[in-house]
Image (cartoon, rainbow, N blue to C red; front, side):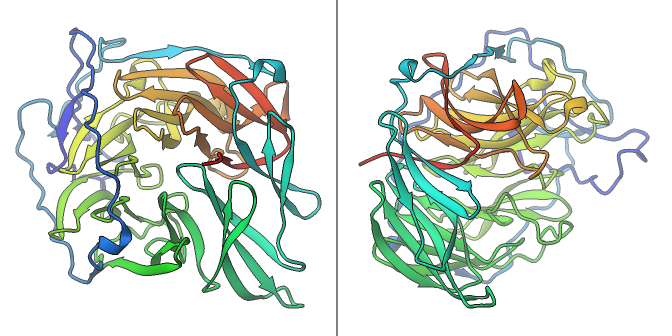
Length: 455
């Protein structure tokens, strides 16, 4: 893993790739023929601070942005250069395996699959239910007569479900919107009124969810659905990225807080990822230039670092995309996690998710522009710097975002909505146990919204 200081900026994004005669490239130091890099396991971090102990976040000051630094620094820093450094193929630092595990359709071999799956089907109206694969029992989740429900989210520990339920009038206009808290046995525990403009973005931690108005820089509310307390969180941003109207980072908005609400990442101008320390309201670092649409920041479970996909803008082109996963810690230090460009001419990373223990990152990987829209499930072991492509197929042609990835609490299994390789028009739910090297088909023609476990 290579440490790179983010403070030093690549400020030449405004130059188009086609018009640059000698476009600068971000110099990620060439991996040497040395023993494989192993990351030191992160120390166990304290759980996020309870919301009641967090100081109010009504920040209104404009963040102090670090000035660009163009001075070259010793390797392995990210610095501008006029001569791209070629990357050798198959260096010692690049660990990738392809392990195509066939998907079985045999429940007798699936004793390792535990818990319930939160599924929806359209028949013709939305039907939601909890499906226990072992017992084949289903618990129906139904709104009140005439109401509609949506925005299903399962808590990080798998014990709770929240969703929105709307009361409509005869013209199908929303009269009231409520946040519903559901236990793992399907019992409604809370029904909380909220503004009709809010949607559920994500769980911030096991005790809080984030409600948002959507869009680039929306109003965000942190809600504790157990005691019904809430607070608005905001931070004034004057250099917000505004080139994607009504866009956001896959439902997170373009401002993403860590679980402890002590840091945030936002999309800044000209096209930067900006890390802000909320305790002192200072910019801890920024990555520039960054392809905003793809560079979705995902905070680790303990909230001390985040992962993002970074595209080598100056060495990529049609049919020759070079995208890697990078880790950014709370001090703004950058570490390269993957070296896919040493194996694939084209590597496009989409929809990545941390495991609950913070050791793994599962992601969808596209490796051929000719089959654009078809992705393969891959898993990175952060501690061993190892990527394994398991060849479980997914697609994003219709939604432009691959299906979400859901982890088991043990961090040994992932569940995804996959494409049946024998019938490209058929969707199936697959559970991959990558330690047992088994993949099991759970059901088909349903949408997966989460993995639920009894406390």
